[in-house]
Image (tube, helix red, strand yellow):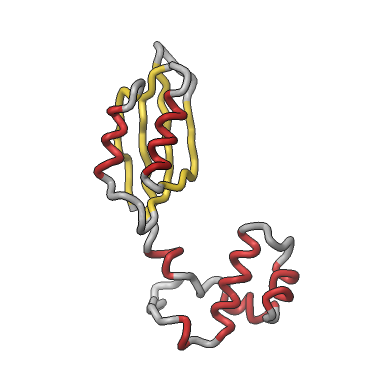
Length: 146
């Protein structure tokens, strides 16, 4: 978007049908439901030119505004099942794990960076720090949250 762009929120019911169809095509492509934009456009029933005209300007509200990205740093003991229990705990908060990067354990502890998405039905950030109560979790830091 350029600096002159203006975002608005509007109910899809009042917009031309092409906008919701562009969202459907984007979802099909992202989820590998179709191999190409041409086949996705054909399946949804819009022209490729309409898709390309609007694809960079049409987003669902949930996609842009109701999801938060959180980056966590964990220091975990080098014991079986510690990372698994931490991931299970995050799952219990309705967090969607985006990335997990773990270093090689040194002196019995491994650093882990986890990026996750909290949706509107996810818990608040406060329960994230209570992950330290799990066995083997030595340290937790919330590096960033959008």
